[in-house]
Image 1 (cartoon, rainbow, N blue to C red):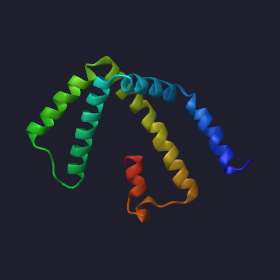
Image 2 (spheres, rainbow, N blue to C red; image 1 turned 45 degrees about the horizontal axis):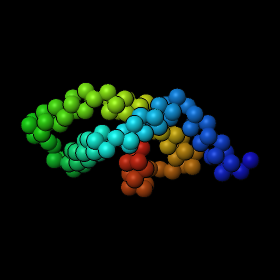
Image 3 (tube, rainbow, N blue to C red; image 1 turned 90 degrees about the horizontal axis):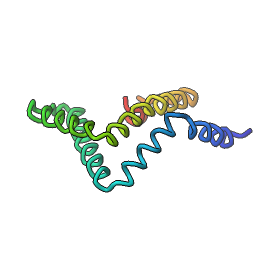
Image 4 (cartoon, helix red, strand yellow; image 1 turned 135 degrees about the vertical axis):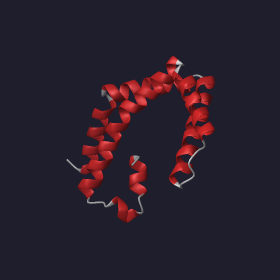
Length: 123
């Protein structure tokens, strides 16, 4: 078996795991509702901005933190969005492990690549 066949076989196995099935269903629910999709996209954009600011030493103010925490509480009070976030959190450790094992097997030093792979793995 060549490496591409092995990748395809692994992807097919991954596709049917409970975590992937749950994530795909939760994602579809969000994508099928323009209102929910807009809320999630807005929230994720705000989250990314806060993380980016934090990563360059621009800590958010207490008011910004409280505002974001309030928005988080509002988001998770919506069952479909809470389910989507839960499904995402269940899938992320799997994706991180896959990434770590592949980079390890290939002998890739993430620090050598300027942290690019660490960024992709969420580290």
